[in-house]
Length: 338
Image 1 (spheres, rainbow, N blue to C red):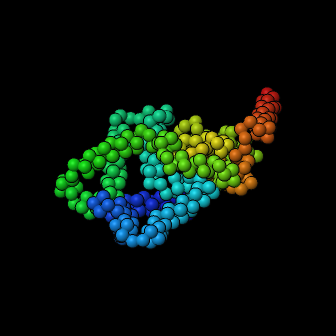
Image 2 (image 1 turned 90 degrees about the horizontal axis):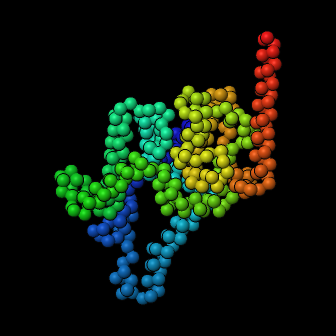
Image 3 (image 1 turned 135 degrees about the horizontal axis):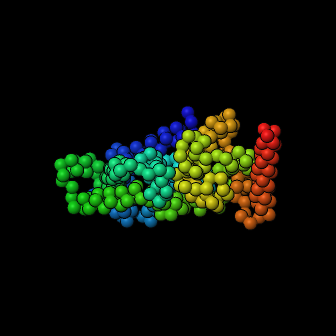
């Protein structure tokens, strides 16, 4: 099983959990009851009972039912983010799953991943736009209805929706949320993930604070292999490098860590480079790979450091030398022909 197949399984499973958690009372907040439902049980502080009891009992209940679960969740989540960055976004997040799904659909129909990029080739007629828009609106409605199920009893919602008996508040929520998500799925998607998602920004800030955290590293010792690589290597149109074209967040995948601030650890760039090496270089290992610890510090090097300057200088000199050798060999072959 490949890396991306594994990721597809985890994303699909979590997306189904996101939609079905309210239906099976795994987790939701019931506005009609005024408390959370967790694994079929009402989760409440029983404020009236607390006020009626002594202060010690009240403190114990608040600590065990609120503070302790909160701190445990924050600690575990913080450790995972500190070590692995935005791994939730790339491997579980339901929104990012939709982002990647419509990236592929738009690329197939409109020859570009987003409306903000130049198309590799013009699309034919209005039908490709309709094929992109209709699923986007449908998915937006599914999302809106799924979120509403976290606030109101899902079974009652299904019944009211089928019989067109939704209340005013629920109807307004569905319409407004569908419009907002439709705009998101058609026009913004990864732009929201990069600049609008507070959870994603929070993860990125923690990840950036750890210079030994998991990060994608570019093998600069073999950088000259990458020079002639383009989408045409895989028989596709476009001037981008396959690794950059594969990135759902549209990041410079071979750059330093700061340039990949919003990396979701999806590994699409690694898979794309592996595919190129398999086709072009007789199954050589990918030039992009995950590293952590001391190796990750090299990716997080200061932009203006002497080491980074020398490294870039050596790369340029290496490329110039290889070009001059190639030109010299071409001149010699031309003379021999003459």
